[in-house]
Image (tube, rainbow, N blue to C red; front, side):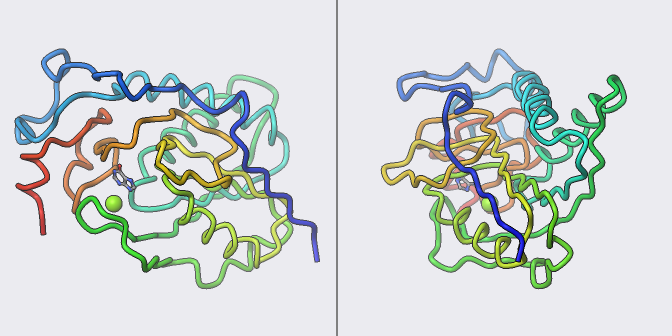
Length: 226
Ligand code: HPA
Ligand code: MG
């Protein structure tokens, strides 16, 4: 069986830290869909900043994994936008240098949230047979990591298919009371423990059509509660 190397520590690459007392940007400073007017408190990470940070993560990934083909495992639904943009940035780097990173992209779906609460049961869909990961370098792409429980369960599942190497890219790491040691290798931003939406992150399926990462307002929570 191939050795599985799982490196999941936030070191110098722990991402851009957004402090608990950062009030965010006023929504009036940016444009966003009018149908969400009143449903948001503030902008935590504007879309342009997400893109710039993603470009740098793509470079770090190229530096570590370049020249060996990888399987990108995109964690749906929240991870789709980050995955598309990260893969795009890696493609641009491959075009513009003599280093290249052949990628295959596979999609799996995880669901564990109802309203703004994590539920106990984690469903992994589309991951029943990942035997094609055997001996491969795998990059898991996740939008947000909280307690790390979901990530831990997913890593365990992926490891059972004997990949050669597993790395995790997480756009956001939330500072929750029980942050696990299981944190991504590539982190975009470390954010306060507040429920955020946008850039494909949802609240009961709403707000995926918002470009910026924002804090949902109490009114927004009530309006879209189920
Ligand atoms: N927003 C959306 N989905 C999530 C979050 C969040 O803050 N945390 C875990 N899943
Ligand atoms: Mg969700």
